[in-house]
Length: 111
Image (cartoon, rainbow, N blue to C red; front, side, top):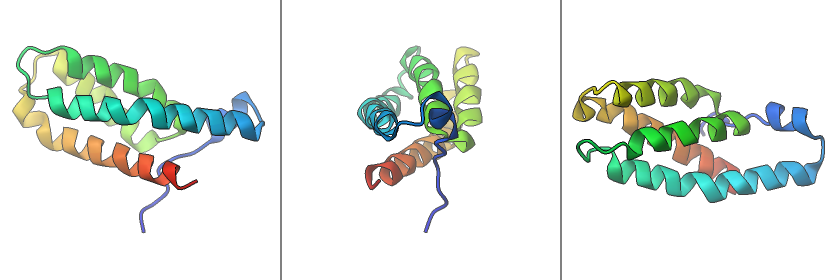
């Protein structure tokens, strides 16, 4: 079994309402899977700014849901892309981020 990849501390600091928590989880589950799919499909497109934009949009979602272990990599990959680093060399890091985000999504879907 995998470790828990989410932490609702931040969401609960905003509101103690169970309905608010459910809404935030639903929003994450609606917004993040398409972003992950798009990130995966565009990461190797030369000169595309889309992956960096997606990573930038993904950061607050990961932070909100408390998926802290993947937030630093998300920030680092966005910076690497904007700095022009070789995308092929970054693929293992992208793969790890995508796998982690998908695992977090799976954990949230069964709540």
